[in-house]
Image 1 (cartoon, rainbow, N blue to C red):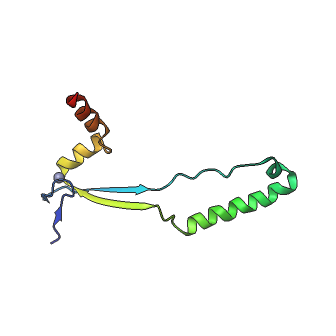
Image 2 (tube, protein in one colour):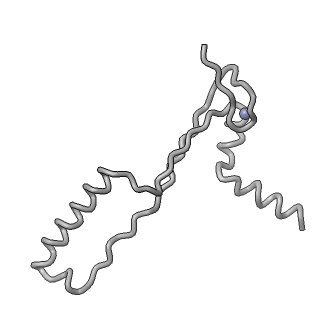
Amino acid sequence: MLHFTCDSCGEQIAEDRFVVRLEVYPAQRPAELTADDLQPDHLQALAEELNALEESEEAQELPQTRLFRYDLCPRCHARYVQDPLRVATKKRLNFSEN
Ligand SMILES: [Zn+2]
């Protein structure tokens, strides 16, 4: 039988297990248009260029793309979904320090 441990608290997960999957990737910046690009005969070329770009992006993952996967016990799951990036926790800590 498989045993899972919680990636947050390290305890063995007895019953319900929750999986966190995170994907971090750079947001795509739209290609900058110049006045030349808007000339009618350039639009077709631009459209083809954009299509090629989209296809190549789908074909290969960007190197900066990172995938994370964590197992959480029910207790840590409940805490995680309240504040996944720990924004509120950090604010509270900063507040108590002052
Ligand atoms: Zn846990």
